[in-house]
Length: 255
Image (tube, rainbow, N blue to C red; front, side, top):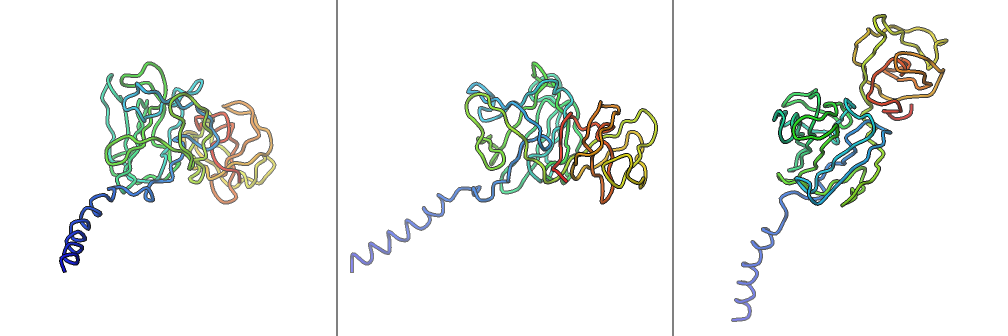
């Protein structure tokens, strides 16, 4: 009888202890993090022991000032801040649910507002050197319950500590671009060539959503010569030679 009572008492004591050991954020709830840059771009990611916070990643590449920054995962914009010439400078935080958030710092431009819902791959800002930055780069953090955790991209853990090249697979949401023709409307074609039928125009300065990209006729435009064409709708293509995307290469998945 004593043994039975002791077993029952032990069970009653251990039950709440088991509940207390369950973590606040389950690993299964982690976002499917991707690189915070458009599809296909290659960036150098640096981690170091004296970084603040230590698990953050600094991203650099040649001529990156003004390059497009996109959401690493879908979520709601929780903070859009500007600390001036100190700390993060212009920065953005996105809430992904279950205690997970991401931060993007030293931006030159913030292109979203608090409360906005963003999809993975959607542009949220541009690379800059605001705050306590010594040169253009993106300071990036993945966070859980308020603390920076070791980052991962496309299901693979980031390299700690040192520098490694990463190719963005942030492709599902496509990308955005700005048409620049120096004044004239840009003709939209039914296919990736100037010989395809015209199906409309896009105004100079308009923002377009690029769902995918395809190789076609070589065109020389505002941003040089390229065979890359951007699909901006079903059966609607424009030459990437007239579209600013923050990259000379592909920024959206293949059509």
